[in-house]
Image (tube, rainbow, N blue to C red; front, side, top):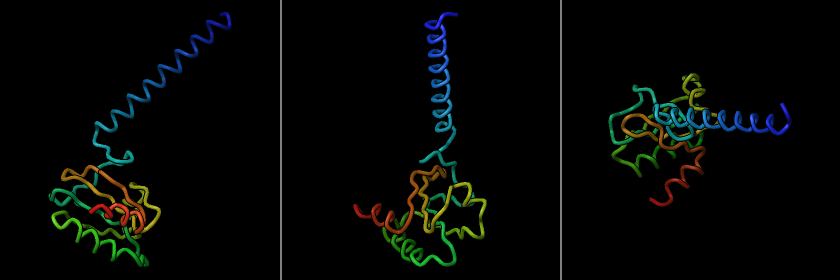
Length: 129
């Protein structure tokens, strides 16, 4: 095969592979993946309210209580659930928790709508409210 035809064939393969990857990513969103490609929350955490806030904490988190209080005040109609990441390491790993507090917000079905890291992230999120 001459170099031009080889280049054209290689380009076609790259385009097809890219299209397949894009399709696969779009299917992940369709299959219930939420913000940041995160899987839905386990049903045990979803409250049935209009939304659920899950605060991943640790025993030594000094700002987690304030974050919980601020979320409850700002969203009184939504549930707030605290998870100790040291007691539920499988959940912490599943949602990529590396810092406390990390907060996930979900809709009524458990689909993750937002992932907020640190008390400063929560303050920025709550600022417009």
